[in-house]
Length: 136
Image (cartoon, rainbow, N blue to C red; front, side, top):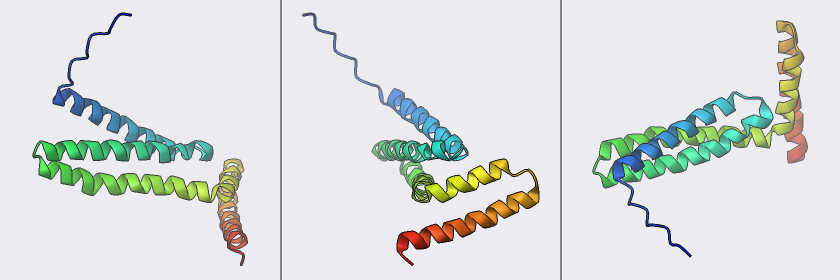
């Protein structure tokens, strides 16, 4: 058996660039998936979770390099943003059936009056769905 030569150690700057590129792609994918129709919109939670992990790794690296301001800014701005993406996907998963019906109704609505009727029906469906789940 032939042994593979050992990999050269990653240089910190290259690792930082790869993490930053991966974070950018994950956040962009989350944003695009949030705007997609409902079955695909649930994927924004997974990409948001990946972005959160990458953000924490980048912030830890910033603290190690003594770039405290950059690490704090990343955590203060990035963590709430990614948590909002994850929470939005979780809420969409929780209320999947009423939201899917609302999206289907809006897709078929031609006039603004029909869209308003869809919104009203969607709110009623959401209230009745929640009361049936809670048992009220």
